[in-house]
Image (cartoon, rainbow, N blue to C red; front, top):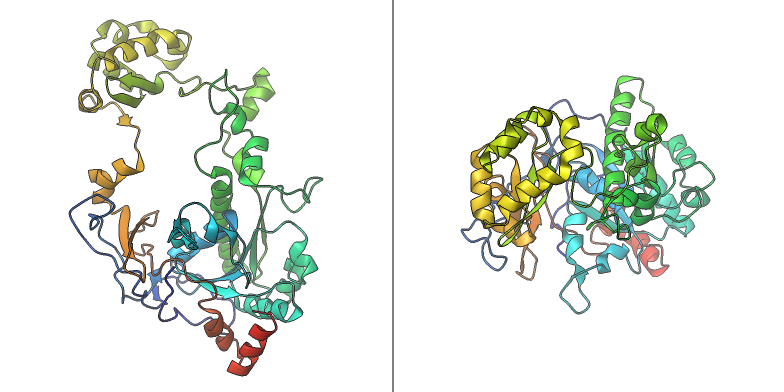
Length: 457
């Protein structure tokens, strides 16, 4: 994977920085592996139609420019949280094992196929500086303490208690840096009887209730297509970090711990499941593709595939029924509101399905969208590459590896009007920034060489 040719704002000793009130310049040009190119074709092998918003050579800018992040994490939850901070201008120093690095480097499709690095790595580690440190060595632990003393945020997703055994827990680090915010992501949180259990996103999705209500009632609960438990936890971590930084900057400069349990992050999204059980004794079950208790919202067959239709509100339902030629249902007073439609779900779904299955997707969507009814095909990634909405909003951007291989990445979201996020460089090579970062800490070339020879870095 590519590494940056120059550094962003030096990670130099300083007081923990405040979130800037205005846009600051903090960075370095991306390397030859980061430039975006425009084009006209949506096929993966051709120039991308999605122009890069951050051509090589432009300085890093962003809402978090000047914020310093130290990432002590692997795989998804912690690294995704740190990635989002880096996308908006924070300097992210990622600590990796000197021998193998983050295991994500070898997950899923590799480039090149034999002995290469995960294509996922290019996006999950973009804008980060890779520094290799053996956390089990006393010298490595001291380096991390020096980095944490300069940081605004530490992001970690180890099992609770591990960093404390290394002398790198919040009590130890905050003694050196009282303004430090530490985002701690773990399966079950830092307290409670399950805190020491291993936990991944799949376990969190199960314990948090998501798996039980996902899928069809006559089949086992399926996995959702992505590691959503980890990613939801990462989002909670970023939100918590921003709140903690604001509180620090507004109330005297002290940091705090942001304790994110993966299962709790999933549980936080469970809508009305808890009050329904509390008041009515209702245990929500799997309902397939439909939206339970809200009618109509389902997946419907067309002549050449499937579409999703959401007639969730009363006015939309009426427009939908007129669009499919069912004025009788549109004007039925018993169906005017959702509570009247729920008992007649099958009747309504049959009416929509009978209409859609006689038409190809494009025709059905043209009619429904013409009637201002929310409807969509079910996109594959290939559909996204050629979709005009994705293109207009530059949601896929072309970059290149140092070997010249093009790679398209998802663009940064959300879109900030004045301080948008950007990809400065792709996920770096293992240890690409070790010498740079240690040099800025005051270590000389001889010390760095000795660290390397002794397995510290």
